[in-house]
Image 1 (cartoon, rainbow, N blue to C red):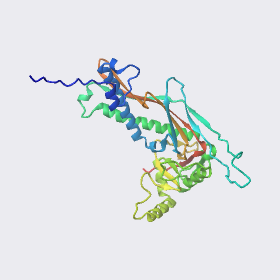
Image 2 (tube, rainbow, N blue to C red):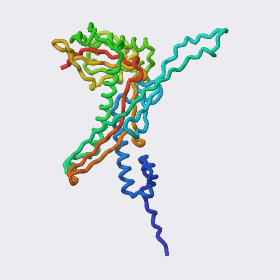
Image 3 (cartoon, helix red, strand yellow):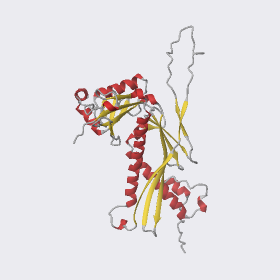
Image 4 (cartoon, rainbow, N blue to C red):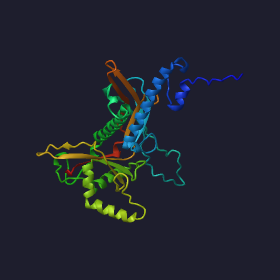
Length: 354
């Protein structure tokens, strides 16, 4: 008589989810957890990673954020256990010795002293959530949690981008603020003091003259972030247009260097962001002006407080007898100025294209 062999039961254990979702279940052994408990932990971690992936995809500055090398924004991550926990990023000055050695001199006794210092960052909690009536999934042709995941990722990217831009502008040295056109202060900015190639050249000279290292990942040496209206004024500048035509001629047959973002002028790669808000001068009548940000290497420091292994945490909520459902994310982050000489701010008016 042939005996039928039954397949072994498949159990959802820690090894299963560690393989597919890289989930940590904490101190309690997996064999003491119910399948429901394991599944609930896996789902939250899985969705948190999906939001984090969407966040990284929408954060266009992410190409200039690294944990090593010479990025525009130096990143540090670490566990946050208690309120007020700090993370530190190393700050080192460049070497300045001339290095000339003769037969009567040796390196011994001529060494430069490293002058390391650290910037301390205390990540604060940021978060957002969305909710909907329990019956709504029956009425729309798409998965609401997927839509919420996308929206939360975009929100987190914009929130961090705004934090980075605001911190850089607030921390710039007074000597590194320049004004467009004939303006010499905020109060003297007129509608004709718009962004031109000359201001980009001046910002390059300040950073280069201050020995600010080149930014990893930039098509030039430095990166500039400006409002789209300011960028439109720059495109109309005759000096910029001549440079575009010349570089296109030089690159004929190989493609124009003015591809990807908006081109490079005086070793400064141009980009735009709608999160650069306008401000109004105190003059009468007031003139709206914008602050273009030009960054060298390691200008800013960015810290993430890890929650387990992830930067973000997925949150779910069901209330009012399951009549209301909601999901959300939270994360801990802080931003600070790491190298003040690597930041230049250009203040200019802009032409309304409407």
